[in-house]
Length: 246
Image (cartoon, rainbow, N blue to C red; front, top):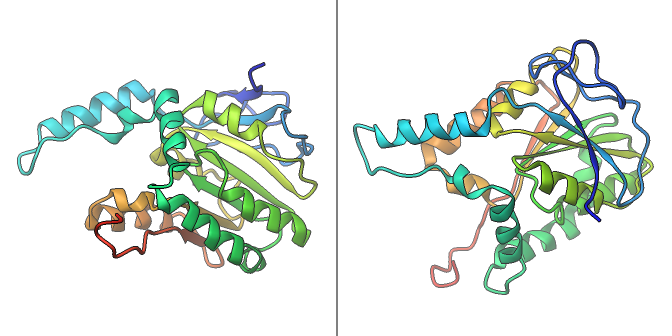
């Protein structure tokens, strides 16, 4: 049986667990949703400002029309449902050391990280994937008794449905999906209803290592600009210096 989820799409008025959300720039997730057992339906908020096809077309044209440097294809092409599942399979390979190393770090430090996240915070994970790593932090937050909301941002509705349905039941941590790109997520964070809530932005898996140095700085700056004092960004980076292993 396929995992289920409730997709919240643009709709006038405030969001709730039974009605659709306002457009991306004014939508807000419900804060009254009950905790759900593993395998149950989770709210997934559609924050896309444009179709993925439009984003791809514009990015392909931009990269092929670049006046300097090599012509490239956007990595967004790789991240459909099949691509995301293929990458998940890769993360279980022994040769792909990064995931296991990051799991070791989070296992050791999750409780300490949880202490630094304030009560009633929003945790937004960029490119959430299979949630195997973030679940270690969510478990630590659950144990701490802090009430928080977790938002998994990803491109595939089917993958959000599947991965969110596999999370365990939490009493203090409420889980939502965000369907969209990084840019969509950054714009959604400007929504007036959530603008001044405490937030922790999470990017794991050394995803930022896919950027060139200047682009990585711009990426982090873009999210930093929508945060406020007391907010935080948790970044996972590959620290391996063994060229053969990498």
